[in-house]
Image (cartoon, rainbow, N blue to C red; front, side, top):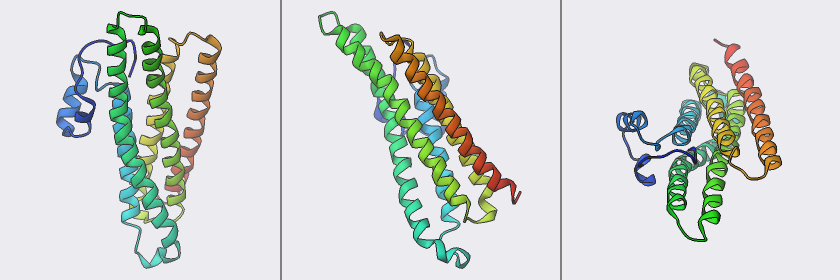
Length: 214
């Protein structure tokens, strides 16, 4: 979400109930939501789902019996992450509604409402970033002991999770430009940049695991 965007938007709770066809059509339409923030949430959820699929075809096999407890923990962790991505997708749209409301405000509360909307436009992608990095860490852990026939899916999950971090970085940087404190904006950009580097390192670790067998 870019807090400076304009136009209409569907309700936040509608986004995660859309079919793939309807969601992509809505993204293509001339309206701000779903936009980059909502797409980031969906991409992150898909990354997590591919990790879960890889795990589902690994758990219960005799070859990985010694890792059953670790796999059980990963299953809980990834399922929770997927649900959180869904919530954050809706949160991004809700944040845009806050911006619309603040922009229409004509009384003394306008500035405060605008700052609240701006905070939401930054905090949601920051939460998505942290969640994506956690998913990438889980993928690296899973890759050490997983079904080799699912390694291509593991690699795809890593690619999508890193892409989610990059999408979030764009949203953070575009909204950081609206912060009144230039130093705080610069610090925010630097933190987001470090997170991109970390995501890239984890993606490379996933790729290295995949490359050993493909």
